[in-house]
Image 1 (tube, one colour):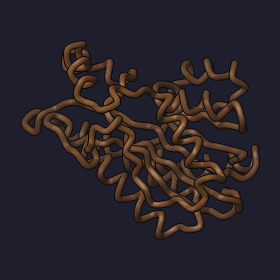
Image 2 (cartoon, rainbow, N blue to C red; image 1 turned 135 degrees about the vertical axis):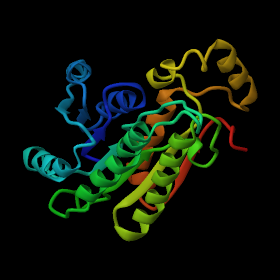
Image 3 (spheres, rainbow, N blue to C red; image 1 turned 90 degrees about the vertical axis):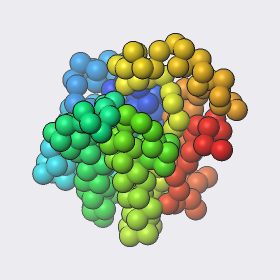
Image 4 (cartoon, helix red, strand yellow; image 1 turned 90 degrees about the horizontal axis):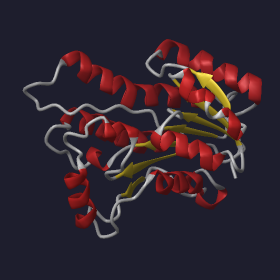
Amino acid sequence: MSNLVLVVGASSGIGRRIVEVLSKDMTVIAIARRKDRLDSLHDLGVNTKQFDVTDFEEILPFVRQISKEYGRISSLIYAAGTQEINTIKSIQIDKAKKMFDVNFFGAMWFAKAFTNKLIRSKHNPSITFISSVAGSQPEIGILNYSASKAALNNLTKGLAKEIAPVRVNAIAPGFLRTEMTEKFQDIYNEEFISNMERSLPLGLGDVNDIAQVVKYLISEESKYITGNIVNLDGGGSL
């Protein structure tokens, strides 16, 4: 099992649950922009760092300092993400770019920092991105979000070739109830959720399902798995 794990986007939803699960067995550094959310993780014995993932020029020095302070990093998990619902007619360029900054470029720059051999562990180093089934199945109203996740999927496969022996995988969840989706209750209302649950062979999953797959992907048991986009959608993509 990995020793020192960096979880980026750790303060809520999927990222928070990943921290809760992994902190039972390993040392976790939880990273997020909001300090008040991070402070609530201290009861788990988790080390926290406040950081904005769009501060690209500071990512390498930031990760280097963590490595100096805590030791070599075994696994990087990038769970930071943002979503907006807009048709192509109403989308604005500044918000479109911001989504790519968080969902894609932040992931790329943290991965770039992790390629530094003085930062990462020599034993079974891995990167796991949290993507979305939207990356391969774009839907009306989330085209920019879908595009950012498609770019992340492509990055996953390319990095798996370019930076081996670092293993690089992504998890692509289907629809989950999270704080991010709750922002859009006028769209993701109870009727929508009930219809979604009935349409899926295994019904709706939850954030714990994602965290358990992350735990597997950074473990010794998955040491020959790289370049995979793992659809975790209860059969919705069938």
